Image (cartoon, rainbow, N blue to C red):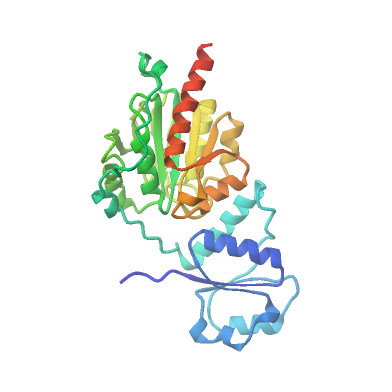
Length: 339
């Protein structure tokens, strides 16, 4: 039997706060069953048939009668939320993350079903764009040095988009890929197979002691945080990822940009929530670049939209566009360095 998704009810006498809270609740995958000002409520709101799993109450003006009715339902109540900062500021993703952590402590994670079976069966689309050709300059390069480290960040709907992107990436590109995908740990082994069914890119779950390699994909493990040495060796921290998500996209972006600076790239694919939006500005400040999947081709655009709201995203496109952009960016960067 499928577990029911937690239901959240918002009551606030501030319209902008209601909008921000609704965005945070729905963006992280919870069911929003009520979003109302106190004066618009009626007795049906508090009937057992309409019961949420948590009340999210934020009032400027005290309303003892309302609070008595809410507390009488014996449903958990979340008070004391900070005022939402303007969206697009650095403070907003941190505020949104605090809201999610508080909800998670009360009702747990939202129910998100990621199904990899279609990716295991579906043949390569014969009508897709042609494979991207590696530029001549790269074909003649003899060095196998990893020139860039590209973080692929994904959540709900991400595996399909990431697979399509990887299917377009030409062999010989001097880029090492690190995937930070929110997924059940039991599904990670399947992920190592389905993502490379048609492109044959070497792929495995990252372990301490391994090295980043050009044209290889390492998947960040769910159970433990990983970092990287200056020469690209994987370091297993043997600690849980910081924050409510595993693996933490924010932590992966922070670790990669701290080590590789202007050699770091991040591509934000389909997903719920805003994981990554805190460390995104740090990657750009370190000299890296961030791109994102366009809303039209996302199964869930919340994650790339949240990164776009930070102002850090310099390119948006579908998986083919993103792969083309990567090849062009790497080629131009290498030519500029040689010159």
